[in-house]
Length: 248
Image (cartoon, rainbow, N blue to C red; front, side, top):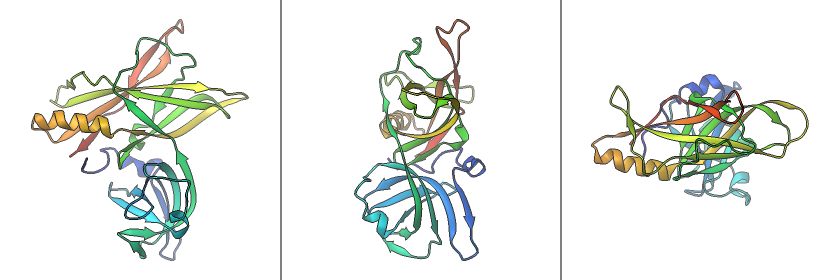
């Protein structure tokens, strides 16, 4: 799906540090980005700059790696001056750190939004730090009472049969629902910030077909998530993210 831009809120990534950069006086610039691994034109990482433009980086060492594959997501620290092209528009970079980012599916069957899960966790979203890149939607979540060896299980779903709702400005908005459960966990708890990614293109392709049929050229969606437990702890109250918009 050929989508214009990355995400309406991409500019906020700079202030939040997700897309940060710093020069060292030699023309080389240090970057921290989220990225998506692609195998063409060679094994490389697709990343985006502050304006949402996509560029590709790699190195001989990264091309030789056998533990990464097409569609993998990452947070990557690298240095480049965008002067050496490795071929096909891929810039040579010195990659100092590569952290894998988990990729979760987006389910077409809506989760039961009335039922509290076992080991359900409450999170908050850093909506301004979200980014769409090469079929992946990166989401930053803030967790409270997170234990060092705790594993977080993410579930993002929507009702594929449900029509978008129309707001007071005439925008058609799709609602997705995020749930997080924990697995394991011992020791002291602390606040935790997590970067995760979702394979969102199937949802976006279906939404695009609907919007195109109506003569529209953009998709608007938001993420609903449990923000606090009810007074008797048998349920929870929902909150929602700001609106995400993608043009096509």
